[in-house]
Image (cartoon, rainbow, N blue to C red; front, side):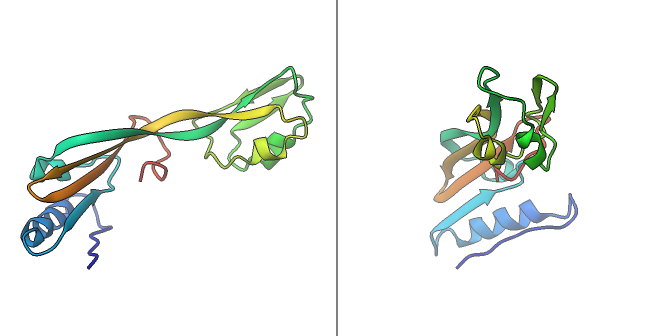
Length: 149
């Protein structure tokens, strides 16, 4: 059985309902709780899990080798998020705007663009009294929640 508690205005009790359901089912079912509210996860407040592992989440962002670049501008044309701009013989990247789609590096005719990871957050795993637990935590100021979710 999969039960999902989602949506709703902040403060309506979604976390309280989800953690209460998990606690009420743990003796009859294998229970996992995933706190996907990566901007402000708080299921741990109710469950007090022991965190056993964590992993950083990275978003691939472009890195331009200007020795290879011919400044053709194809990377900037394909980027719908305006995360890369070619100005004369300079390429500017805006990692905070990048959504990590990889189109710029894929379409670069000179293979001048590689991707490097920019940390967007962390995912933690653990357990709490028979309940498997996981939560994502978005880095402060990070706008890209989906990779962490």
